[in-house]
Length: 239
Ligand code: GLN
Image (cartoon, rainbow, N blue to C red):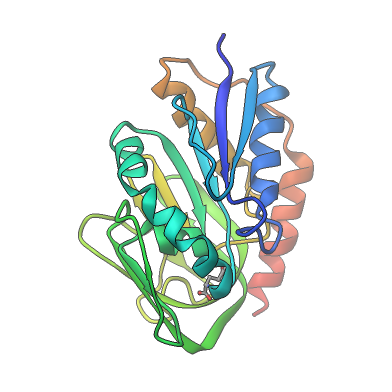
């Protein structure tokens, strides 16, 4: 059984609120099922491997997004080809914004996106901050933490990941959270997200394995993860 390849984009620059935890969770859940997995960190100037199964990107301050902006934009054609080929992607906040068409920061800087997701983001001075929970048609109820200045508008090419319940979500007005387009997920939920949402982790792994023609996943005991999920849910519901 060939190893699944997980790419971790910009692990140094785009890693706030513990987003690297998403990489650790996917790697562990595959290893617990005795499935070989390799994690490939890709930073500025590094080539993307050819056999990517899952691509992960975290959040970052406006300055960090500016730092990696040119390198990220230069990967546009490759990332769009990977998206068309069904590579599974989970992108959090800053990377989610840059997977879209553009992020215009609160200072008016235009950070070019790669147009993989049909979304556009405009920054503003008030930050959208706090615990959140989101009900999603694909992966049930998710809990997480948001902290962003960007307000994201969804285009017709995407559907929301879900409906925000306690937090502000994409833009604080239309109650949507995140975006989904085929095997690509964008969300504002940090935390990190996957340790407290094992059902989403398996949703992502399941899609990658099915893309490789693989079968279903064996069950794992997620009692600890779900206890953490419930704990954060209660905090978010108290907001
Ligand atoms: N810098 C972006 C914003 O403020 C993304 C923030 C983040 O990744 N948490 O909206």
